Amino acid sequence: MASNTVNSRRRPADDESNDGTDESALETARRQLNRVADGLDIDPNIVERLRHPSHVHRVAVPLKRDDGSIEVFTGYRAQHDSVRGPYKGGIRYHPGVTEEECIGLSMWMTWKCAVMDIPFGGAKGGLVVDPKRLSETEHERLTRRFAQELRDTVGPKRDIPAPDMGTDSRTMAWFMDAYSMQEGETEPGVVTGKPPVIGGSYGREEAPGRSVALVTREACAHYDLGLDGTTIAIQGFGSVGANAARLLDEWGATIVSISDVNGAVYDPDGIDTVDVPSHDEKPEAVTQYADDRISNEELLTLDVDVLIPAAVGNVLTEANADDVQAELVVEGANGPTTSSADSVFSERGIPVIPDILANAGGVTVSYFEWLQDINRRQWSLERVHDELESEMLDAWCNVRREVEERNVSWRDGAYSVALSRIGEAHRIRGLWP
Ligand code: NAD
Image 1: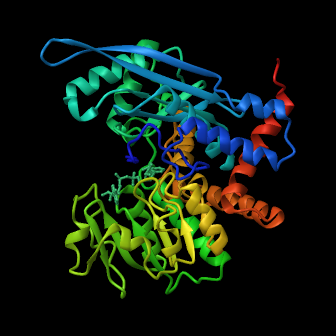
Image 2: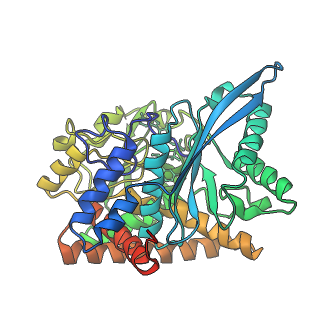
């Protein structure tokens, strides 16, 4: 499950602010939209439309606590744009959830689906609640009631939630069950990220890490770094980091450093990534792997070929960007590079492959899950892997073309591909003002 820096004012996938910490997700998303739109031939009226969400739903969700008392929680579902297909995006349970954050993150989902050419729009929602304060039965009751409150808002052809911070496959199973009960028929396609036994997709959990590995492989080839012998440091050995590390290791790269929240380990000869349990499998296993421990900050400035921040947001900042020695940065986490650091990397000629492309394997396999659900047919793991690779390579080639033809950064190239597709769909359909 995704875990970000928990801050309602943190940026989503990109950052136009000073150092990304004093600008809301919505302000950042709008600023990024304006910046990329300036360089494209796109109707300003469409850009103005994209500055606003289509709908923002706010609901009150009562919960009967285990002690018999009633507590009422606030929930949101922001739906940004559906010109290319149903809204799609996570549902998070966190005390810092705000309406503005949901809107900003829903915009980011619109771009992410468009860069991958997935026929979905962007949404994001959440409940203002600390999930650690909920017992399992409270979590279930709250989820079922939240699903009921959103019943007219979501649906397999309308808006399809997924897990996010504080929610997981079990939450999605309860959500899907509650929705199906009210509809009177089993509707697995109302959410993605479910367990495979009720319509979830094989390979969904490892998909973001797999896409990070695939994009790293392509980026290394693009910059003439053969994977064999390429040294890589990966911050965060959770779902994204561990899956990416193990694949790159298997493909011949040398993973010299990995970390978790407790610290990092460094082995210039290469770490046996299969031997180290991921954070989910065994928290704190990373720092027990070797004696040669370093800090998470030191990992970021190691003399390696590739740096993959795959833990939390805003770790590459103005303060450390000058010290980064990697030749290439691939964003595994959402928003690990602040705009100031982006500028430093650009001046220093260090390419940064953006999160919106690199970790998009998650939403791509969510799309596969939805296809499986509406067709009532489960794909094999092998098919999921093959189709994911093909989608990632297509997206990579489209962004690379933009980068080469327009001489822009990889981040701007990815946003341009996304915005061009969305703008064209709005132009053809019309705004109906
Ligand atoms: P995870 O919880 O499985 O793993 C996170 C890892 O980062 C763990 O090893 C943890 O110990 C480490 N970590 C936590 N705080 C840290 C800190 N302050 N410094 C260094 N390490 C720290 O999370 P994940 O699902 O792998 O997500 C990682 C990032 O990738 C997040 O930014 C998330 O939003 C993004 N992401 C996840 C998915 C997904 O579906 N899992 C999809 C796209 C993007």
